[in-house]
Figure 1 (spheres, rainbow, N blue to C red):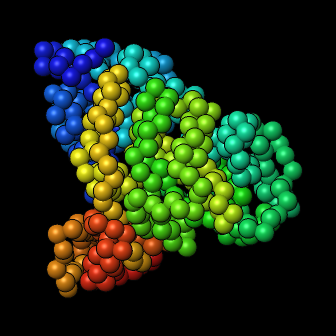
Figure 2 (cartoon, helix red, strand yellow; figure 1 turned 90 degrees about the vertical axis):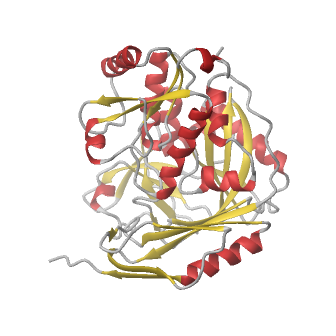
Length: 435
């Protein structure tokens, strides 16, 4: 077994699959946190990414070795490609590969395949494909006796303009009976809020993009309730919860704010939440890695589980907020140690509150960003766009032009801090001509 002292006497490596980012400040923090945890353990980093991704983006951290996969980004790799990458790592990274991981959602499957070839801890490819496929994931949970909203694949549209559906396995089914809450249309495999739409009935397809009607999307029963997520880690299939996150979502289902720890007084007990999560993890076959799991609490105080991810929460959810509410937690150090078969250090207590908020604008060319008030030391303000850059819309809606992260002793304090800085931000955007 790998030990912390091993790194001092032999060269140990962490393979990081996917070393390019979206360019946001939050994503840069994921990579910086991982890199610093490796440095602390004297572990060298071998980055793996696709040539076309690397041609357009620069890794946000230094890597000791960079393996380039030929061609454009691909969600999966065949056996020959995986064998070639593993051989190159073996030749160029003398010593021992202690772990392999991916920080980004769209590199989880490639990492699973490569980790298997290298012989280090991983979630199986079947597990990754299952949790990334929304209808299949819901079907697996439902079969394990865990309540799930109805979820069907959209396979196309008939000549009469009606949507066609199949179940998770691909078997053709009749269109569902409409309900009082409506439906959510989203990519079957995807992340974030890209392409998400709400419709009131299954005949209401006027607002759906042509891409949706061609397949690759799913229809899910809309859940009325408050949305949360759990941040934690899986170690040998057992769940360790760090904290919970409450979310603020705009009218287009784009997350624009997060706060930790969430007020979970609406559920009967913390133990119930943990036990239900463990049942879900068991059903899905999740063995290791950081966890970001979404769920709702309905007005009837029922827990409804949503999407499962074996990586840190997006935006500033982790490591920024998690590290702020549990001062002293070694967020990526825990990931590295657990993947190496080492016990993680005892968790520090939750003693603080932390939150983030995004400043939205219309899409277009940014002409001005400014602040007419001072920023308190408990606040970090990140401008995601500068004058002259184009602010791109998220989900064909608003653009994110700034992010604010606040820390304090309680929710009231951090909310006031966020509002103070948000109200002091000045953003001017000029629309882009379509001529």
